[in-house]
Length: 280
Image 1: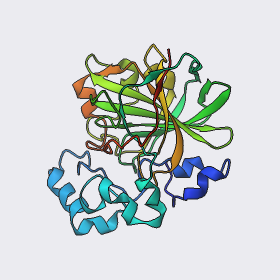
Image 2: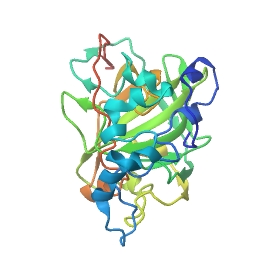
Image 3: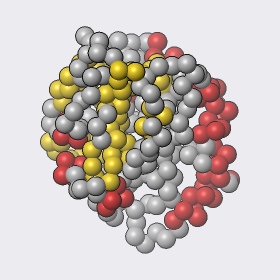
């Protein structure tokens, strides 16, 4: 899931063809767009980031979140990224969702597992194996990784949240599905604390953490908004089933600051006639 790879637009058409390679948050060449290495002695900060992403340093990165390799340019950077200019892209602003009582309940069955933090990604990212998954309307999806964007990528009625967790799954036919959880600033979140990197490394160091329960990171309610969209990073492959949970979770400001990668939110994309349904 978080290993580096070339992204093939055809991967969705081949069941089991490597969702792990496709659903990267950032390839191994990517750096933290905040410019923060996590080393307290590194005081280069955002100025270094601006140079790396907006100037000559961009040649060392396939894509980024700003400047000449930022979201507005993704589709032009590579033939592999042409889908980034597609008509069914994510994230979106969720507004005027249509209640649909025919939608099945989101039956989540995660199990505690060891998680491996991948320091090569733009954002705080964890690989998992045999962590269970979820079922909805007779379809089954297995969890393969989860990660956090700061601030949130999706907005709800125009509201943006402090962060957004993406629980990335693969269906039995290879189709990707993402369960998204909004994170709003508030009380400290004990389950989140169990996976957060330390203040010093901010997710830039590899590490294995035993017996993390992904389900503990979800809100009490599994009511959701759903629509068909895309990956929110290149190659922006479409055909992704999105389940955005309606209830946010809380995290303290100190906790959200420890999530790696400020400004890792792709701008919201037009619906282009798509509908968003809301479970009841």
